[in-house]
Each structure stands twice: as C-alpha cells, then as structure tokens.
Length: 121
Image (tube, rainbow, N blue to C red; front, side, top):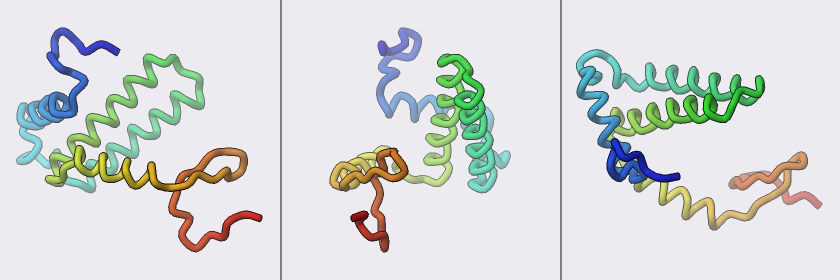
C-alpha cells in the first residue's frame, strides 16, 4: 500500500508514533487523564469489540480497516503513555515467535509456548 502524500513516509513506525504523540499533545492527554493506563485498556477493549462486530457482522473491509486503525492508534498511544519502546518490543517478540514451533489446535494453527502442555500423540 503506498504511503499517503499528505503524511510523508507514512509507512514508517516513527511517522505513526510522531502523529500519535502530536494527537496526545494537541489534546493535552497527559494532564487530562488521557494517558491513564487503566482508561486506555478500557478503550482498547472497546475497539477490539468493534473489530469483532465488523468480523461477525460481515462489515465491509474499509470499516474493519478503520477499527483496526483505531486500535493501532490506541496501542501506539499506550506505548507513549507507559513510556515503552513498542518498536523494540515488537522486533524482540517477532524474533521469539519466529523461533517457536507451530501446532494445530482444534483445526487451527497456534504458535505459543505451550508451557505445561504435552505434545499431542
């Protein structure tokens, strides 16, 4: 997907993070409770519910994309609020996931640690 001409290198993590930081600054989230992590978890749960509704109700892909974007913005903002480097965490986690084996569970692929779970025979 091409980057937006209005947003420069819109495919970069740094550009997305800067846009979310600008949004937080514009609305003074830090001073107005918008960076409270419990509040942010509730907002993310709400957005995940909206994604679920899009999928289960067969909404158009554009609506699903909008709801996923809402959740991505909240995730990036939560990283800002918690002062964590999501970019570094993402790549650490991807390296870990790529090293894990996959299993089929109930007809679907799962890539998990499976701690304490015996290999099916």
